[in-house]
Length: 280
Image (cartoon, rainbow, N blue to C red; front, side, top):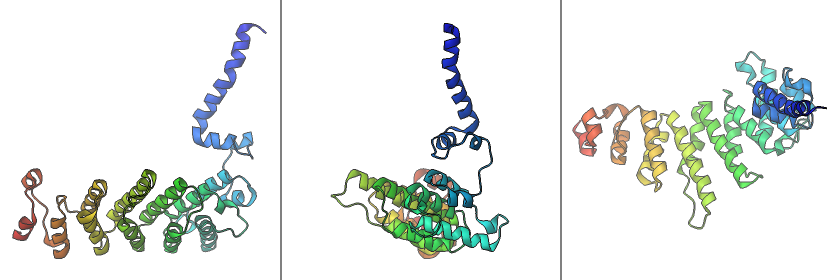
């Protein structure tokens, strides 16, 4: 073989790999080719039904991907029977329960994350207690993965849009900060969790949620939490008041309609105080 032909043969696999990556997408392609059940035909064929994968596959990466495709049947033209089956499977995976014919997916953190994430897209009110339990139950994985699961659960509760989701979000937002003996990593996990809950409360314009945000603005020692609470207050109440807890507490006491927004000059100069609100 001539040197030129040898060089061409060395370049060919790299070119082929680049082409496959560009057509299939890096992450999905890599997950597929590294699967224990990899077959070339799977790169171009339509993915099998989620229930087929969950029943037949022994690869938890494939099971996690199948769980992510389990759209709510009742909002996508499915039947009530399908709704019950899907909800049972996702519940077991989200709660780390080792039951049924689709295990051991519930023991895998990626499967659990996928189930929690997709439950946030369901409008079935039964997902709220499932997500609450997923957050509150002890997590058996690494501290980093446990933190990811808890934060994803809060994000899913927010995404449901269900008013009942506010209770756990309020609990998470009001949790105390890390203790003095906590590691930097532990402190960051708690802070990220609180911030996720505070951001989520911007979607709940009721007294409990707004009162919690005002409370954090008044008492929390972390500047990031106070800033996030202020932004969530403005979104929830549609009031562009300054980051002054006294103004927000007065607004809450009077009711959102009783306190007007500050004018342009007041916003620029910061001349918006408790007295300004009272004079209105």
